[in-house]
Amino acid sequence: SKKNCRRGAFFQHFGEAVQECNGMCDNCVSSIELKDIDATYHTKIIVSLLQEMQQNDQRATLLQLVDKFKTKWKHSGCSNEAVDLKKEEIEQLIVQLILDRVLKEEFQHTAYTTNAYVVLGPLWKPALQGEQTGEAN
Image (tube, rainbow, N blue to C red; front, side, top):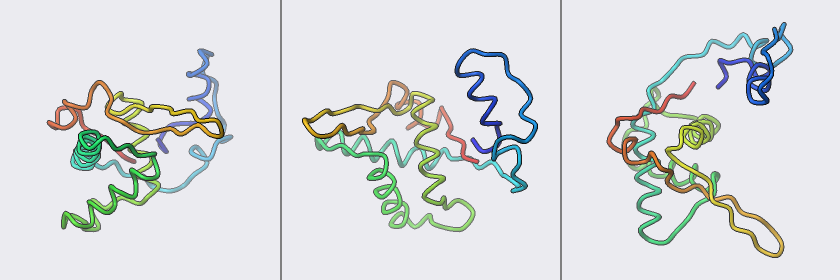
């Protein structure tokens, strides 16, 4: 999230007492006005895309999923300025869905590389039904 202090997030992640940032991170220094949007519909599209892919024994990396989302969004006729997300915002939403356990990452190791694929997580069904809403900012 661009609303929360990055430094505070690091302290919290490592179980340390949160200290004042005093403008030491980009989020605290930023003067950009942020607005919350309801990303429930975006979440449903992402989950339905992954569900279709899983049924066809296909997988996608985060970047491939972003591209597939943008293509499906464009063809759905919903791309008006009020709800259209930038690539960076879609990536942020997918990461948030991973943190919320709607999605998860699966790793495939080869002799030369490791690929991280985004797949459905344990909480994908409530998200598809709109019970767990996504939020982007």
